[in-house]
Length: 193
Image (cartoon, rainbow, N blue to C red):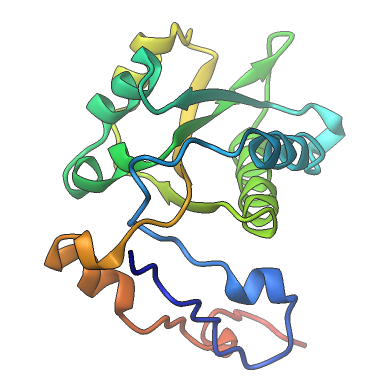
């Protein structure tokens, strides 16, 4: 089995190794079960993400491969995501509460994104690999897991062990081996006084 070699980001300024080495794979080992200790650590990191007024607006659906919940999430994925994400040992839905005690939480999606980011970094540090997806049917997720109007899925994350790149379809190999690029920080700055 040939796994993908690490290809750290070519950064313009020093960053933590765990950040430089993290990338979003689409090639997961379809047989290796989720490392439960690593998953628990990633969920704990998400739990400790910052949130406005400590509201912690995030909710998670954790679905292990082979479960009905995993199949429901795979069915809700769109397009290309369906072709590879089912191999992940777990799929995690990050959902955001729209209100707390009847008061709107305009920052809830941002805070939920921070929880997902903390999860991703801890997962990588613990030997798991991840890939976040926006291409999924939010209504199908809501129906499958009984979300009310006050809860909305923000992202779905595939989590697991790296798979065999040689066994992956050509389209997946090409994406996996493509150079990692980002626009320069200067192009993202509106003001830098």
